[in-house]
Image (cartoon, rainbow, N blue to C red; front, side, top):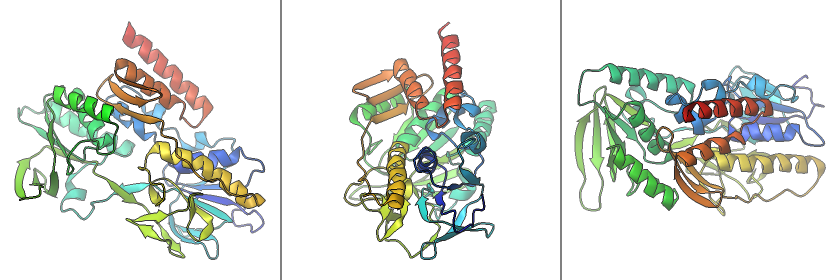
Amino acid sequence: MDINDPNSDPVVLVGGGFGGLTTSLALSRSHPKPKIILIEPRDRFIFSPLLYELLSEEIKSWEIAPSYSSLLSATGIVWIQESVESINNLEKYVITNTGLKINYSQIVLSVGSKPNQLSLKGLTEHALMFHDLSDVKKLRNLIFILKQSSETNNSLFIVGAGPSGVELACKLSDVLDNETQIHLIERGRKILPQGKLFNREKSEVALNNRHIKVHLLTEVIEISSDKVKLRTINDQVSHDFYMHHQGVIWTAGSKPRLPQIIPKPILKEGKIIIESTLHVVGQKNLLAIGDVSFNELSPHPGTAQLAMQQAIVAANNVIAYRTGVSPQVFKYDDFGEMLSLGRGNASITGFGLTLTGPLAFQIRRMAYLTKVQNLSLGIRFALAWLLNNTHQCK
């Protein structure tokens, strides 16, 4: 296909995460089916909720990181392995990082997010992130160093006590056999500030059982190669102090990865304001979903669950726009929350139940099988899981 053929009238998806990939696959199954272009710089889709199990070697990388070429095979979707630098929605074209110009009729923006404290002194030089396969590799190297260390007072700091921070703290504690002191830093008054009460309570138990030190009302001020500067926060007085570390992992929030957009959309805290139909306000051929978007009338935390639900409505509304049908209003269905709490352990609030322990871990794993985008990969994943689970039960 000539991607710049004005008669091809393609739909462009910017970003191949949960939202962008799900939208593109949904469009590929629609009737009538438009020409679809997915622009994504990575070569593999990362099923991020299971990165923790990859770190602990409970699963293999192929199970959670299928290639885009395999996911998009036989779908008719054109995948361009680049990133988008700018979007001109007046003249309807995007410019990629290599200068490629791609015309479109409609565009769905789902580019994800990045850490929101890049200005913090020492963060980029001395802290690790936990978003993709390269981060897992770096963290495994750190784990190897800590396990080889003869020191008895090694300390590892995880910044942010949301789901990522809590899951990572429990997983790392088990992987390190509780021989490294793990500190979980949270500037709020409680862990999992947006989480379900049952999961928060079970997470507190899991953290306590592993002797993980939780520092509430505490923020990171500066990171050096061997020290982290912390500040306690309360209504009366603050206190700065230093602690030695052998590693710092940053999970404390994110901000959208927005390209330049003309005309400039309305933003709130860096996110694009969208209508209830997921259209960017004032731009009917531009939709935004996932971490980059915000609906003031119906705000929801940016999760994979939200992005995938939005993706289906986005695909429907792309087709509605092309066929002159009224767009669908997005309504979020909260199917609950699942947390990994160490090796072989999890906590679930949802599916009409509250459950913790090994059975919750198995349910969580199986529930994610339904989210795998490609059927053949899903079968491979299921077989691998069942074989592994059978082996563990012997």
